[in-house]
Image (cartoon, rainbow, N blue to C red; front, side, top):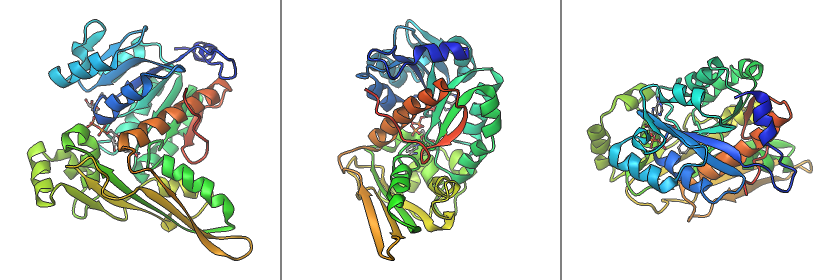
Length: 343
Ligand code: NAD
């Protein structure tokens, strides 16, 4: 897609802008939730999606129910009729065929270099538009930060770390920091409840990779039976502390505090949709008068991980498209711009 084409679709100030054409890469737990989040939106039109074995495109819009039904029964969107194509090179083929203004990358970052390699595929294809990810590890976001100039030269506006944490909670921390002259600590604690781990395989594997004694490669290589055996030992709970989470580099980059003052941990219950604890971020600092205080931002317990990841991801996609329209390309994190609300 050429730059003029992307730009001509976007007129965020007009009362009736053309709906933005949106794609979702990865159609597991988050990808399917993303399709449902987009369904009632007027400003975004879901036209493309890919999984590991295929992709689907329909300029008139994809139907979440039929896509989810096909994916669950046959294992790939490639079986969708009409519009599905089976392919072992689904991302590459979709990029070349589908006119899309922006993609949400709901892909596993396994190995830890995968998302950066997908960004490189977009650059090499000569694609121009907006990409949004919800990646989590500091080292993964750092790989994208290192690609900022290449993304800029390619005419891509890339929004990284735009899920819940990093994402919504990092942005809340950046906002809360404004009350203080000095930030002492940013403490993110999350509670995630999912009914079964198979609905979010990559999320669970990537969380296991944070446990003591595990690496990303080990978690990636675990069979489903091995994951289940591990979860059996803990009654389905994954307890995480001092995680390598990119909230730290995102806040450090903005001069809010050094990365060692940012801590992230939480509990994931893989057998119960109820959150084991309330997700929150606590920002402690000193005001200009010398008072020490803590701002706390707590997410509602009824909001799911999917709601708190996909909502922000599309909010940042809308912001990214606005930046792209103004000729601002390169790399942005969730902490440096506000997500816009998608109507
Ligand atoms: P999942 O395992 O449920 O689904 C992954 C999907 O990606 C599948 O559809 C799979 O077919 C597809 N896929 C894998 N390799 C592919 C390839 N090479 N080409 C095309 N498609 C491919 O994943 P999930 O649990 O939805 O998690 C997705 C990502 O979101 C993970 O990296 C996870 O860590 C991240 N996440 C971030 C946050 C946050 O707050 N920032 C929260 C939750 C999850």
